[in-house]
Image (tube, rainbow, N blue to C red):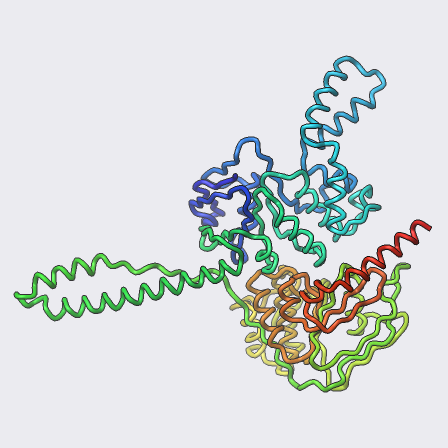
Length: 546
């Protein structure tokens, strides 16, 4: 168990938390939610001891081990992948290294023998003999192949480093597990594996995530941060949302009844306070009036942008023809003979662990990259708007937001353009911020503003939910559902994929694709996908054996 007792944190004059009292108990998974800037990550740092509160105490059950997801992707660059994972239980790792150092001594003394015996006993108590196999199981579950387990961390791509650090946090069955955005940069297969892991995890989990589907799957409770307080709700994210909305409605209804009663009492007092025969009744009603207190209903600190993609023209029947596109990069076949035809009602989710293939494909069909072989052709009635995964070059400019966005507007009027920025929560002087100083979430909202102002009838989005808070993801999700045109997109947000797509194209590791007219959940339940993956995996293993 871990609990916060009267936790207050002040940053300058601002109180981020004010006398927070909350208890997290064994066997539950708590989703820590709140608006951007509410202090979710900060509160996890307080719980883990990385940050000292201004006042109050964190109480941890004696003898229990706490583990948290590391955010420094370079901290373990000199260690192997397997060692990095085992460091999730630092005491176990230290025992292993001390044992190894003793056994490597040429002049092995009696003292060394006694110390080795003590270490071996502690090692066995901690199930140390299974440490490497347990670490390997976690790594494989997250999609890191066995041949990478001995690789030095600095030689891994960033996407795999994220998975290794997650495996480190999960390693060794910690009593309390703190996870800050664990699904960030994970592919959908790895997220599904993590969901099952946490569902079966028997200790305490506290997780921050912007993935609503993930929170619904794994959480037994929701801890909602708003106005420096944390309110605990039983149930998952959807249950919290319904409960919180119901509570607000009940308070409003109760206040309405109280207001009606106040009006009734005030009218009686006004009419009869000067009447001698009614003076006692008027006095009694004055006392009753003083006792009535309206419930304070503070509006949530959450802010939802308004995302509405409205195409300037209808789309025809011919949308996109892709024929035999192939692309090899650095000797690796990224796309292999990809062909399909898009119809005017298609909303296509591109899924699968081969994320690089999705990005390369989007770059090809938007003209940013040439295929080695094959062709593509857009229909004459189509206009396309593209949200790239990497927008670094776009924001490498000294232009301010409103001037940059005006370039893409047919109406060259700053007030008109600021209207789109206002929808995306850029208020007042925000419009004159320089592009290069924007945060990750602000950059995404600027790019979505451009897509709205371009009014295209085809949207191409490569991981648009990265860096967005839950409110913005919800707004984007609703905007995509309502959009009457064609959508091609990739997203790690399960709910966005499930509620938006009516067609699934999966890029397999060999660069080929599976193409199905179906919803995402139905696709995941289809055995054919698993069989094809299995066939590919077996064929790769046979090649390696040969």
